[in-house]
Image (cartoon, rainbow, N blue to C red; front, side, top):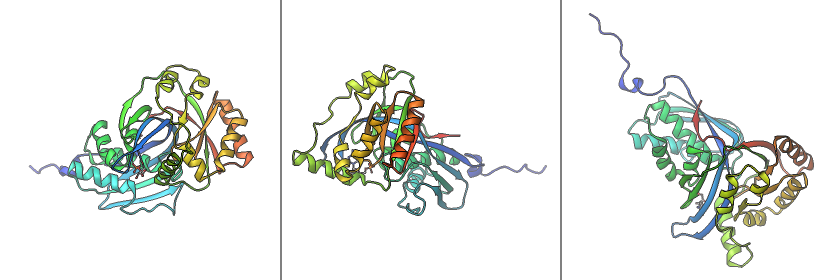
Length: 315
Ligand code: C5P
């Protein structure tokens, strides 16, 4: 009797066809920045919120590890071993004891260095995609553990939704919120801002007494998230890094003013900027505010988004 053909171990585990993962951008509804720690990071007290602007990573079987891309940042982003996607694939392969072989293709809609955690999102997508491709079958918590070594925002993007981040932002706990969808307008600027430079600028402003009072507790925001009224939510949103982003890019003040003049309930700089995000009362208002921001010429592009949405997911 001839023995039936059997796939070898490597082929039996994981997906044979391509694995496609969609991953959202994040905004910080509350970004409380504490003191600079000895390891060079700042202690954070932040509420992350995942919104419906997505990057997509497709992973296919290959004989080596290779990355290609299209969309936002093509030609600007290095695709070598310094890329967070490649670093994420190596980190997972090392953890799981498999060869880091995959052909990865990234379709980017999240701008580079925009304060929306685009690079971190891509790293989270790579962990989820390679886990499915290689059949390593890790839990979300295990993936988030690997993610923490890749960047402070990466664990959040494994989970998505709305969540509290502490430590340097990598320690994630879900927050209790009503199943409400909030409507956002995302004003994308020309060019990015460097996150380490924004944190350094905040330290400088604080040392010279020029920074605003720190945000403090997240209690008011957490209370607002349990209600459905965007006007209540608007009063509780804030970002300690905003002063730094405005000092580095004074024109962002015009973007914030234009959004509020167009009817946004509030506007803040997202993370370390330069993207500004505006809360709208409803979907129709968000569309109108986005059109007005585009017409006012205060941003490269204004997009509408809703949140919260899920984190990095296959499909
Ligand atoms: O963690 P991640 O690599 O994304 O951080 C990029 C940089 O942002 C850090 O090297 C640090 O300069 C700054 N950062 C910080 N405090 C944090 C997170 C980031 O100072 N909690």
